[in-house]
Amino acid sequence: MAKNQNLTELSDTDLINLLDETKDESLNLRFQHVTGQLDNFKRIGTVRKQVARIKTELRMREINAAEAEANS
Image 1: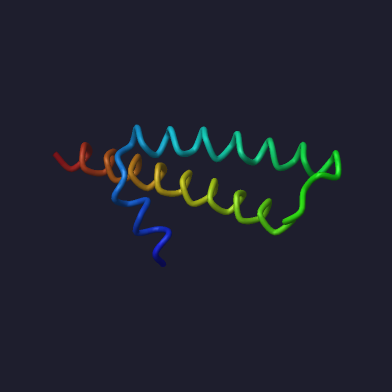
Image 2: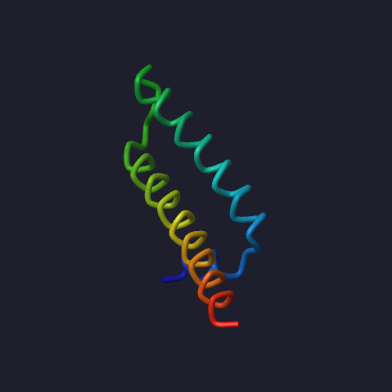
C-alpha cells in the first residue's frame, strides 16, 4: 500500500508532527460535522485511519528499537 510506504520513509519527528496535524484535522472535521458544514463525511474515516497508520508505524519502530537493544 502506497500510504504505508510513505510513512516508512519519514523520520520519527516527521511522523510525530504529521500525527499532530492529522489529529487537528480530525478535530476540525468533527466540529464541521456537528455544525453541519461538512460536505465529505467519508473524510472523517479517512483521517481516522491515517491516525491509526501513523500510530502503528511509530509503535513498530519502538518495538524494533527495543528488540535491537535487547539483542545487543
